[in-house]
Amino acid sequence: MGFCPSSRSQNLPDPYKKYLSGPAFCFYNDSVFEEKDWEGITMVRKSNKHDDPLKVGKFGIGFKSVFHITDIVVVISGTSILFIDPLYEEIDPRKVCCQVSISDFVQQDVCGPQALESLNSLFGINEDTIRGGNFAGTVFWFPLRNSPSNLSENVYTPKKVSDLLASFKKEIGTEMLFLTSIEEIGLFNMVNSRWETDTVVSLDNNCAKGIRKERERYKTEIKAIEDHMEGDERWITSNHCNPVWMKCSVTYNVETDGETSRQEWLVINYFHAGTMSAEISKLIRNRRSKYRPYIGIAARLDQPIACGQLFCFLPLPFQDESSTGLPVHVNGFFSLDSNIIYI
Image (cartoon, rainbow, N blue to C red):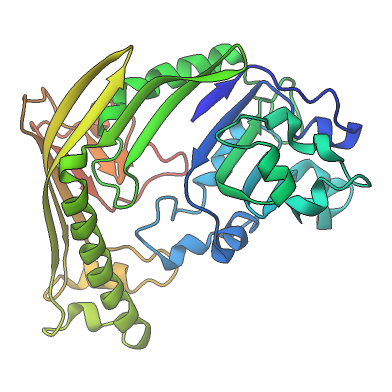
């Protein structure tokens, strides 16, 4: 992820300038959107992650929180580009989410070859992207809200973004502890039209292969339980259903300010099945919330941590309410309030 203080959007037709302008917050992922991802991101009031409890954001408000900082979302992935403009609801509700192919977008009668010029060199977007109509990854582009709107009165300045990134940088070493797909998170700055690395935390190559194998086994076994529950919601409480464990010794490399350090962790994840209380069983069988009996513990091996933190897959903001009081971090499928801060 990174912050782009400006963009080269001056050559774009007026209708598109606001979508691809800067300053903007941007995110990159090296995977390409699947059809279910496009469907999920364009659903205004409902999240399809209810059907996949391992997906961060299942509370239905995760992605929509970006509208605290922006009025517009642009997503470029594979062969498509998506524009989300909630304020267009008042003009034409059908155009709040507008998805077009990159090939069509760069046609002369739409936006022309300069269509993606403002994002050129952004995480690999280049002339080949325009010629081939395809981008091998996913970029999210969030132009900062520079004046109050009907969506929010919150104005987000570059200073606020800088403070946010500085805060995230302090915790970046623990962000991936309980995630089961991500292997690297990086912060980047735009300097003289080039992206420069600020901070990167990544799974160490020496343990990556084993961790990937364990993660896939863990997710596969949990998915098998979920599949059984489609036909029999009480399957998870039966004697035939066994708990799922994942125990990993994990090493992360943290590169920041030109220096590299290592963090060594013992991470244990547990998905309970079999005998459980009637109350927990009822929560699990609630088809709307789909709470699941996850628990996880992460202990730092190379040096102790003063006080552990509570996670709901991602760390909760560190304050008294989110402190474990123990020398370990604890992850759980907690029920959070609407701002995803308090349990």
